[in-house]
Length: 245
Image 1 (cartoon, rainbow, N blue to C red):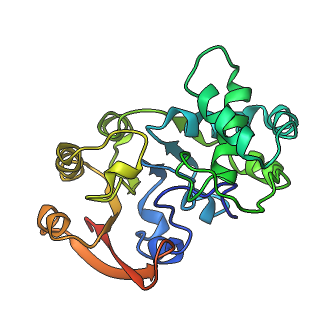
Image 2: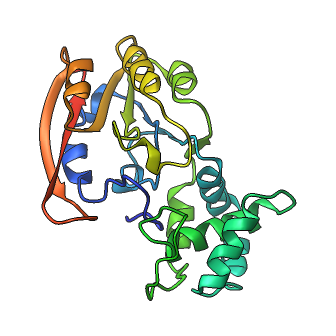
């Protein structure tokens, strides 16, 4: 199943390689998607394990998935009021920065920005012919049944859900690309993530750009180099999958 939205740093191209890096299914009974984003890894399987957790620090992103889970039909009706137009894109952008709208209205405006913007940045109108298609929403609603949706800081989330049979998948903002994300993520956050992952009881799978700073942080872990097509320019983009098992 595909995510209904594209997202910055999304893992649709690498999801097969990432899933292959997971430990044997019998070794974990809870799956926690710490930096959930567009949910490519969560949606890569019909169900990972009995307890699944989706988390992201971006409250608009989390609100969108909560509305898909609990108010799917109302969200679809709201989105039908919009067109793929420059005026509606910038109106939605301004309104999301103000208060007074319902969660469903905010989710619809967020969806419009993601679908009609350039590169899911929420900043620039995309000038493309994408339709505001909600046909797949009922499938996403069914998939999210039973999934716990959180909006917590990664360190707090990991400490709450850590168990011996927990599997954390982490896809943080990549080192030196943090400016592309709405939620601030600093170098100290990279180091804080490294520290908390080195002290968990469970297992982790971590996606990063192939960067000397990252390799130094996780030099005592297993590091697998992978490449994917660079969607924003020609050539390949080098990444790593890091595990503690």
